[in-house]
Image 1 (tube, rainbow, N blue to C red):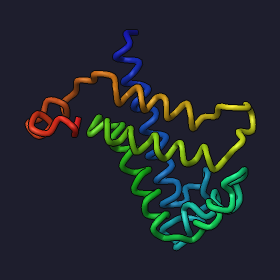
Image 2 (cartoon, rainbow, N blue to C red):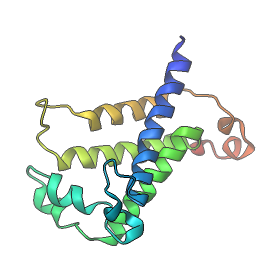
Image 3 (spheres, rainbow, N blue to C red):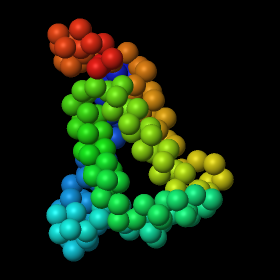
Image 4 (cartoon, one colour):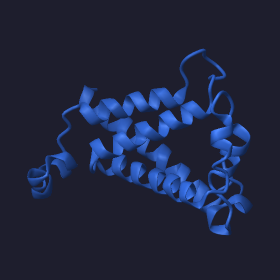
Length: 154
């Protein structure tokens, strides 16, 4: 299998992780989010993580965000946009940049990592997104007139 196919599979897989998290939090599919904690029932999609999972030197800051609807919307739109962008290969530089920011913010909310003194999955996901953003990836989107006119949309 060549590196382009591997990158394609990694991009799709990472996109599915983000899109799945979005739908699980939106509908409460019973995986990470119980049905009664679904965003559609009025629950906050970020409250559980911010209130109970955060730790370390920034814990007070992250816990102060619990119940903030702007943070909920930003998080959910981020999950949805990053997931769709990765799956369809659209605006990969912008999507990957947003994904790196989201992963770094989540990493900082969980300091120190539990199973390793420096790394956790958030850093690995962020590094994968950096690779996706900088690797010259040709697809249908990159060949559109819009991207030809505005290359930053690549």
